[in-house]
Length: 327
Image (cartoon, rainbow, N blue to C red):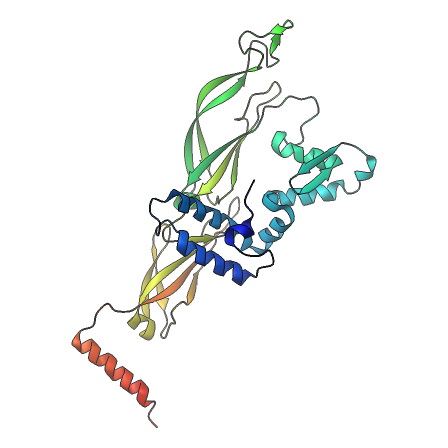
């Protein structure tokens, strides 16, 4: 059973956005892999937290999660099917189908059985089963897209009995009644740019064998935590060190991105913690155009040591500030 996202972050279901953000940051500091090197439990906990925060920090996703729970990714399909079947429920067609906390009946239930058993399958047709395969990618791979070579066993319809499991009324001696044989297979799959935690990459016809058609292969994506960037939707957040003198007087600092570095102009008297938005330097939108943004949070860096001359200058500055402005 999927763990409740609110429970994962330790907040109530009516928690504000600020409370959710505060809880995530507190837990992230505790469970980040950099703080717990080699601790697989901490890494797994950090992934859970990221998945929960990605949904609960997005108003639209949170609404869907509150209504459909861990099936929130199918919310659009649910709502569309509900609209389509609203005028036909009184006909009494079909049985009932329970999908987690959402009880669907009639045509609606038939429709969503198709999510896992072949969408819109005709009665009597024998379609192969869908297969799920987990795959982990780095944040850089999620940005650029990547490929994975999978070594897997694939069911293929038995050519002797044509997937029926029997020949002339007797059990097929090749597949022993299973209707399919298993063969090793090397499959190269493309993972598109923009995938995120929980994304599903569908590879048509690469699932289990069936007399009518093969099922599909679904890659379930997990994104490895990054040591520098935090992903929120398609936006990236990072911290950038700014020397004290540049924060006071203004200057330029380098900001890392996933592919290069860019220069950020820091205006005079920039306060610690200020966020700068760098448009279009985030993650590409999945199956769409454009990219998210990069947010650079200023971390004013104090000097580790001072020369006698520098110390004297700071003392003069302090004395000037205490004296106040001249009349």
